[in-house]
Length: 189
Image 1 (cartoon, rainbow, N blue to C red):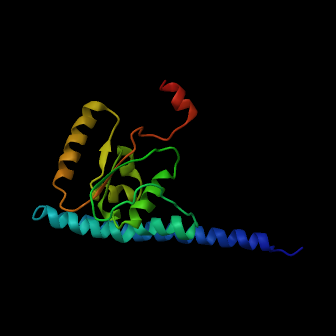
Image 2 (tube, helix red, strand yellow):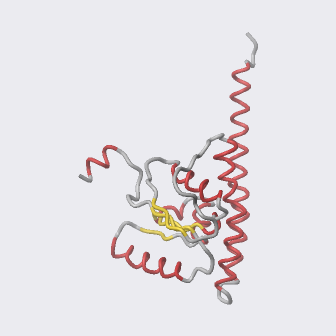
């Protein structure tokens, strides 16, 4: 037997590809985050320019995720039902049953060129996710703490902000707000 078998080389190659994907997402994301922080200088003078620039910055980065899902991971997503219109504001209600279901929503949204105008209600903990937390903040996601006294104000402020959003956007809600599991189901019955 040889020191490096075909299986070992294949495993090494898969590891190199995964490292490349992680570096691609986080290095490019950190650069976009830097540019987003620079747009804070524009905000006091023109909120609409701030929003337009941030939409474009996010639209530079998030398609990488769609590419990773559909091309790199070779996952085929098939949407059934009525055609999803392009360039229209849309309300999407999605189930949150796994750790990666949000990626499917990203891929569908990305097919309609709406990634930079994606708005989602998420947990405040998302702000701590490197690269993505800052992008979600600048994308004007609505952050909830799961405490109605705080969340009522956050929802009111967030939805009122969406009323003034100058372009079509997709507003996504995961109504149950957490990943599904049998123990959570039993605890909530």
